[in-house]
Length: 294
Image (cartoon, rainbow, N blue to C red; front, side, top):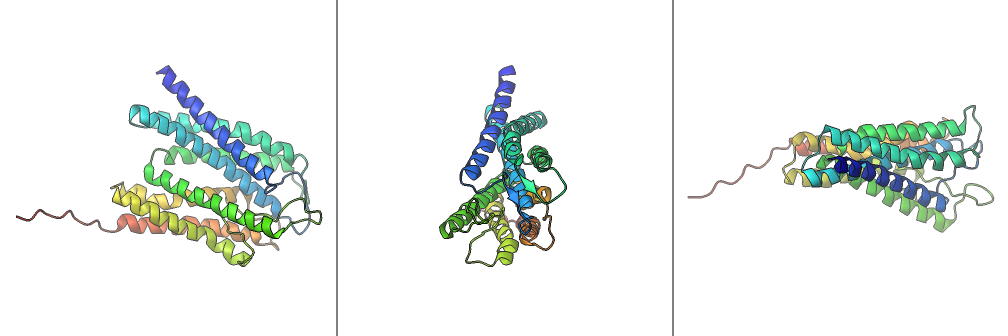
């Protein structure tokens, strides 16, 4: 029994740490995320955008580590109880925080904001809030197939959007400063490509992705005979991840710049439309089994 719990600890902590390190490594390596710079007047909301990504990384790492640890327990024992969920969530949260905090605080030391608050403190709060939110979400989502499936399908879609947006930005060389030190900010859950208008793509990308994920995951779960309640709730699981991240990052310091606020609104809408789609799927009457002919 002791070996079982030790494996749980190692699995949750280890994978959460790896996921956090991988995410920060990719965005820092590509200069897609830069905290160690000056956030000039006119780009004030870039800081909130960076905080949203940081919170999302912490959320994904925590939920990912907890999902893996709970999955191991389910394969070994055939069930996941409250104790396993709690242990998986707590160890994953610790692993995510251990990696995410230093990778955030070190570059944040060199951030220059045109605001009265400490950038290191706000970055630390973003990581902490993301980890705690990830812990609470893990307690509810892990080992519940309709919820976890939607969450990871939606998360994979967000990463696809980020890759496409980065490739478009890099291709056209759109840099935010005169020296070309960093790229235009890529918003979380937004298809930020030059061929689309900024406000519509921010308001509609996440909701469209939420609808697609809800349709696919909801119909598959319904066909598999899953609980109506879990199917109904599953549409909000994935969108809730970026909605929480935007809630932590905030709509922006400057109300005159709307690009962060537009994406913030889109993330909140995504939760509602995803939930509506899976609720309809869950409540639709199921076809009665055909009676054998005599």
